[in-house]
Length: 309
Image (tube, rainbow, N blue to C red; front, top):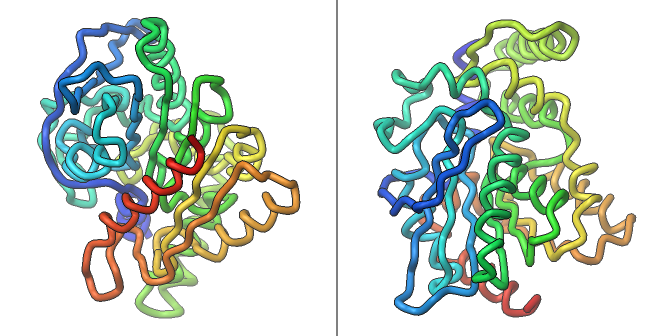
């Protein structure tokens, strides 16, 4: 059960490969005195009026070494300044590693990281940057767990011009994990065993006081938030333009659950939400034949942003 769960926790990430970004001079601390590590990258010789906020998935890696974010998705707005924020306890000193479990994953990260923590950090940083009056528009793009964080920011902050949620899954994280188990188990017997094992684990997390935990490079705080969250409730609170992107061949999150969530939002008359489905795209933005679909997704995001301006 543990190996399946670890594989899922790592797979539930997006926007992954390597490059470093330029650090901002801005210094901010959390309420516990720890530093929020952030990077602000200029893409143009002109003073940018757009701030593009890119939000990574759930892996234990430095966003500074993520080429898909820094080199590709940054081109959604090629003249914007690009903001990325590290997770609690992570800096660019952490060596890039895409193994199921990062051998050097910081203990502070495992104990403190969660979508709630990340959302609070991003809002604090963006509010500070907005105070300069330089940025007229703030656009968020997040993938997988980063999609949830982007949604949470958009639901809570009034500075969001538009946001994009990539392969973020449906309403309940428990259903997401069980869907992944179903599609990665080698037999019905293994699926049954892993489903029962994870359901027991989820019940333990949800019904007990905090305890020491490291499952898939995530601690109790992360698992408790993920298992207790309701993405539909988050999405209902967003009033700014939102583009939801989902690959139909995603085995990490359920495309059907996303479709059901979109139907619920339509019933609630959430006209600010646009849904773009790619029937042949996987969680990692590849076609079923292994070709990258990133450029197509970026082009479509650019077209959507042009319509909401």
